Every structure is written in C-alpha cells, then in structure tokens.
Length: 341
Image (spheres, rainbow, N blue to C red):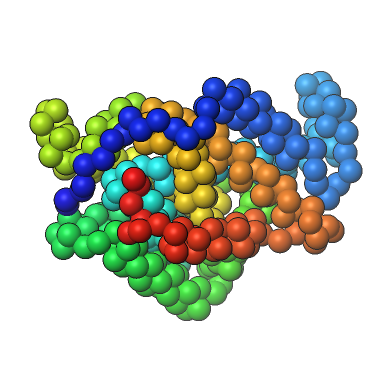
C-alpha cells in the first residue's frame, strides 16, 4: 500500500502540557459521576461503607456493586478501547476518516457475536473470541483492498461503509431468523450498557488492557509508519508484518469492546481527531491520551443518556450517533482525501 511520506514530528497547534493533568483527574471525576447518577437515589458513601463491612443486604450496596460499578467500568473500558482502536486503524490506513464503526470493524464483530448466539446460544464464553475474529476479518478485508488496489482514502472509507452495511444486513437477518435465541439483538446493534453485569466483562477487560498495552508499546512504530512505507523500510522496519500486528491490536480492542457494549459508534473517530489537533502525529502521546479521552467521552455520554430523559433511559449508542454523524460529515466535507496530514 502506497502511503505518501509526511512528518510525524510536526509541532502541535496548541500547548499540550495541560492534557495529561486534565484527562487523568477528568477520567476519575467522570467515573465518580457515573457512580453517583442513577435511577435510584442512594448514598455512595453509605453504600461503600456497607460494602466494606460485608453487608450485602443493604440495597444501596447491591445497586452500587452489581449495577453501577460494572456499568461504569464497561463505559470506561469500551471508550478507551474504541478510541485507541481508531488511532491504530487511522495510522495503518493513513486515513483520518477511518474508525472501527465506519469501515466495518464493529459491524464484523457484531455479526460474529450474533452468529455465535444463534448457533451456540449456550456458549457465552465464545462471545469475546467471536467478536475478535469478526473485527479482524473486517480489518484485514479493508487493508487487503487498500494494499491491492491502491484506492484513494475516500474510496477506502466508502468501501468500509459498504462492508459495514453487509455485516449489518447479516446481523439483521440473524435477528429475524433467530428471534428466540437473540432476544436482545436490537439493544446490541444500537450499543449501550443497560443491564451489564460483571460476567459480561470477563474476559474482555483483561483483553482490552492487553490491547492498550500493545498499542502503547507499538506507538513508536506507528510514528515511523507515519513517515511513509519507503522511509519506514529504510529505517529497518518490516512494514507489512508491523501493519498486521497493528491491525491485530486494533481488532483485539474493538472486538473486546463490542462483545459487551454492542455496536457503539464514532468514539474512534471523534476522540483521536480532537486530540490530534493538540499533539499532531506523535503517537507516543496520542495513544495514551486517546485512551483517557475515550474513557471520559463514553462515561459522560452514558451518564447523559441516563439523565437527559429521566426516568426514561436512551441507549448511549443513539447519543453517540447523534454526535458522530454530523462530526463525520464535517470531516468528509472539510478534509481533502481524509489523510492525516
């Protein structure tokens, strides 16, 4: 795949000294706010005290531990995973318009999850594996298209939209043909955290942590790839194996997030694009910042989705789509070719 050389050492437009100091406590505050807000009016301090004393008969303790805490952790993990997955995919394809939901990575993971639920309804333990394989298949399909045809960036994005539509059609077909075994498919296809439990986060949480660690370790290689294929090879990098490893990492992150959060969209587009305005193509900074930024973004959106229309709750996937759709159109209309320059 031919990628035009560009500098990854471009100075950011604005100072970045405040980003880490802002995002670190910002993540903690967003997480705390997610725990405090809910349909039930409980005292978090009293609930934590009852939890520490082992009083599991306390209603507030049970709500906090079994309802709000897994939901908040799910929002934090999926936000970090999808944002970093977006960074990696954009680097591999050299396309700022690429994101897990736009090029079909999320849809591929979702189709695989629903297929497993339809064929093996009792095999819930296979869901994370199926999500990863579906995400990887979609990633490799797009990468193969880009590498073999040399298609333009916008063409690759549109091809990803088509692939996403195909996987979504397959998911809808499964939902139609197996309504009894996939009874919550509509919620899954929209994306959200309502009803999530501790069992839904296992083993996805440690896979996400592994994927985030891999992305951080490979961020220096991503900086080299941002210089272009020819420069990367001259510096001794095996470009194709590195791109495959990066796609593997992106698929691990996106697939694991989809396995419990459903098809959340646009996190991997909005967060990296905003942060790239501050740090440019310095992936050593962009990757960890995107992890924290994605966590804050999804935590706040989930909190809003629970409170905007209280006592009713809308799936957070709807709110993300309302925010991400106009943002994607803005990028499509203002960026020539969708490159990362």
